[in-house]
Length: 244
Image (tube, rainbow, N blue to C red; front, side, top):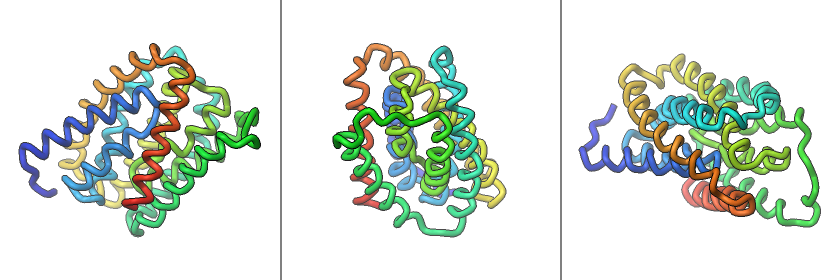
């Protein structure tokens, strides 16, 4: 575990809080926002397991703050595909470079935003059981590079979720996925006791931010919420393409 300075530790804490607030409002991208700073501070091989454990705290806080809005049927179908795919992705992460996969996901996110604004996308709803297939993609990619929240955003919104229902449902599914990833990372010795303690501290900071974000989203107009989600998808996609 590399030594980090006090100023860098403060930057990590501030970024984690900001990422959690944004994630609490949009329902996604806490990991993608925090990963660059964590990678700089700890290295990418440690940053991904750290964000995985931190997200356990973050998503549990989101679940608690949005518990009355969670669609548990959607969580079950999503997790059916996401949990095993996350375990597979975590094993792949232990051996393979992530730059090509990250750039591929970045291109896909940008294409999804474009697709949402094409006439062919209008009125096309996503059935409940299709969320299992969405979970396969999101679970795998999140395990490989630490976060893939925007991947499923279009599909969860097309299924019919919005605002607190969107945030709470995605958080519940992400919590289960994070458990699967953490177990596999630990099996490959990527998650040590020291790493776990650091991740837990970051996770507690994120839990505060997630709760604050959940209170903010209740005051966000429906159309503004959709635009905020798409904005995160655009920024995340561009960042992944640029940095890999």
